[in-house]
Image 1: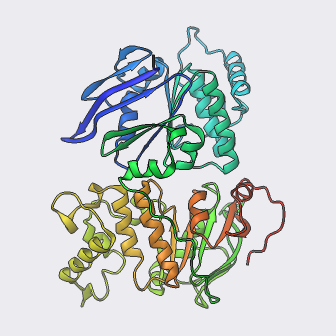
Image 2: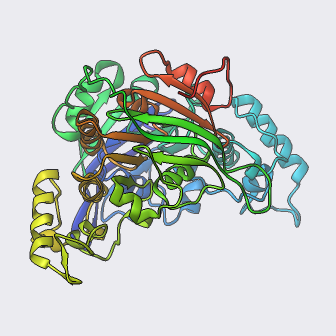
Image 3: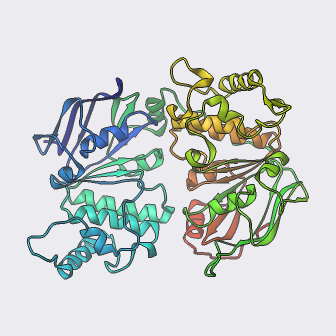
Length: 510
């Protein structure tokens, strides 16, 4: 008897089906991967299982009994836990306080000593070692993830749902995390893991269920399939092989940073600490590192959003130090932000309006301070055709961007930022939240810029992305660049050690 069966689950929002006749089963002692593009219905399905949404049709059987969870608390009480991609921990509280937060006790006061001993026991048993008295804000991302899993185990769950669990881990942390999952599997736990990384699915899962357009299209035994087959079922076609033979970077320097720092107002550790590197024309410089080590600040310093307090920047041999964002954009520096909703798009504007946000005030879109709507509409129609941007309904270029998928929103940004005038593209987490098909499009777009002699600074937490696209790889740790490696010589293990702050040898920054 399966631990979980979801039979013919259907869920619609405003008449649009998010899940349609979806079937999923998970055995005890099984790691089951859930794979699908953005909008395929994975999150909706898991939210139904976890009691956040109610299904319109279908049935859930848990331990052989028909169930219907009305809230996450209800699901947890029945033995189902979920670790979300973005952790729900209180930073200023201790590990123990976060684990017992919200629990009721038969006594007037919860026995912290007993609770702490139980947390330690669980940690030692499953390799989730963390000090119960440490504060969350002093823990690494990997340690915070252990707390989230301990929180679920402390509540005696039997089925654990993990949403993109390795997205912010180093390769070494991912390896340790997989060891934890294997121990849980041996103990008889059922585990559902949502991930877009095919290599991880092949390494850790027993079976895979693939969703496409809200329906479950295939259930496969992992040992009997291949990454190529998985991608074909997921996006309806095999992924194009990446072109390995690429042009070497040109000898001319496009961007140069010398000793660039950002000091905090009230002292303490610098946000950026003496950053020095160059980017050649026709080069993709990858910037790797666990998120929160200064990558966003680096992108914003290059594009002019933040001011550096020390050092200097130059582009094509001319100083950038006193130039604002618009002036740098006019010089050819474009920015694809890691947060497209906050930094790159006005969600209640149309596709056309978002496409001219950068240059609405100059030719060809503006003459004598009057906007030429016909020129703007022509530009937008060309962008839709060139980038394959899909809009909702018949609205076309007048579609509000908030009504579009994440992949199509990203295409709008790419179309605006990667213009003929752009010669340096700072791309920060450009495929975050995108499915494989949309990610492939972004990758090919960046490679095309390199082939045209343009420069790219690619900031990404995805090591596969960094390794496949970059000519050289800079690794950031605590606001510093602690190594720059040639892609042909770099290994995932070596980069992972640098990401964790471990350096075995001095590497030149040039």
